[in-house]
Image (cartoon, rainbow, N blue to C red; front, side, top):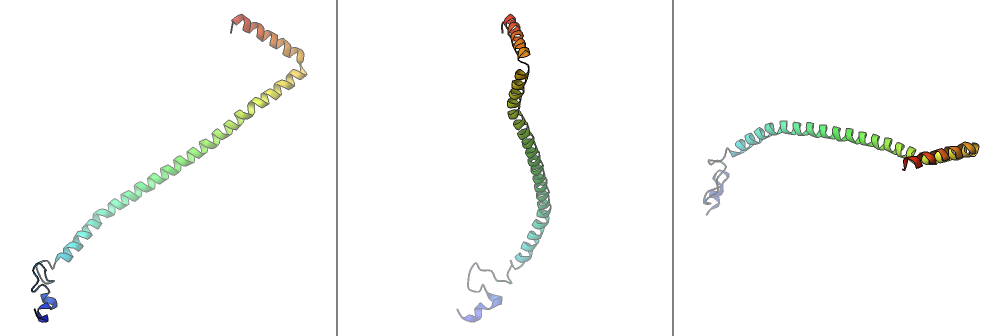
Length: 120
């Protein structure tokens, strides 16, 4: 085969199955570009929808996280108050019994009597 047969316009000469640039499939580049263009036009609204849904999901998660943090803070305060209540009540009761011992004994006897009558 001589080199004159391999000119750019005759790239497939002598090679079966190879199509030259001027052969029947020379327009495939424009068909491919058109197909890509059409796919891009179809994909753009889908990308926008995904972005909008993603943004809405992030906003919802942030809102839920903020609410959860607020509830955790509130429950933390209530738990602290509940843990501090028994020692305060005990201190208050001790001081009341020390200030009024006869009343404390009378109340204890009355409670014991009523509880005995109710058989608790």
